[in-house]
Image (cartoon, rainbow, N blue to C red):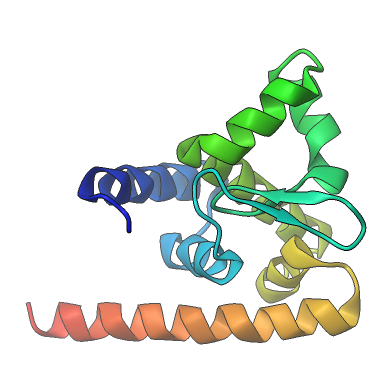
Length: 148
């Protein structure tokens, strides 16, 4: 169960990371929801890599770059921060999502898929999942706005 302070903090982090990376908050929240991580969570993959924290940042793909960029190469500190600090994890996840969109020539949904995998089978399955959540979030927002 999440505490109200954690939810409020996560919301602020999503809004900040969305703004910094020019990503719609509903899209970032959709990716975060599909990833299904929590602060402190570690998912171990078949290849031995770990997916860390709320945005499930993959260690094989990102740990070296993140440790060099933010921790003077200290992979242990980067690992712990990605795993345990929800706001840092969301910021890094938003940055990865932005890079993925750019890599895909600015194509939003292709970038969303690349956030998860470059392998087409996994990429397109992931896009469908995120689109589904995104549709639910934006539909709920439109209902809420009409009732205001």
